[in-house]
Image (cartoon, rainbow, N blue to C red; front, side, top):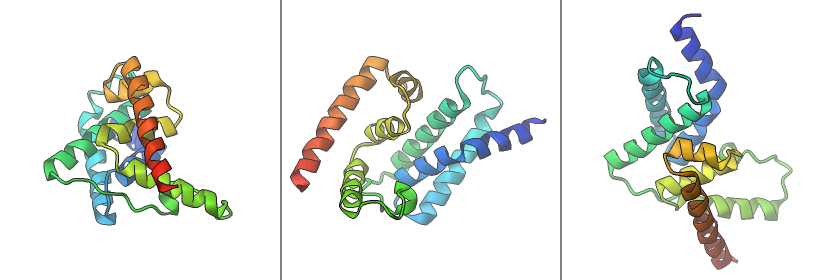
Length: 163
């Protein structure tokens, strides 16, 4: 298999990662598509240098998050909130309505977090261990734990205000 076929296979296997990051870091459908394409481009640019010392998904998370955050900084836009829909939440149709509303409120609060905090929460929701989150974000493992504790407390306070 040549490098182009290998790359396409890798992207297909991990496209949900790219979609999730594009969805969390953009508000608009067109922006989401643009960011998705930019992430793919950056992955392609770095693919020849990927040495497989980390898992491919870890490398993809890192490139995708760095691309999203860099794009936001370049545009100098302050993120408000990401519109929530069934694609973003991946909730079943028969999900309990009061609970669904609560989950929507939580995702609205997550959308208000800063870029690094969003990345940590996203990776946590993907069941990534602290060590992998540290590798992806460039933080130490203990720093990930500390930051995540602070993020949980921040979200808890905001959700209490809503009640």
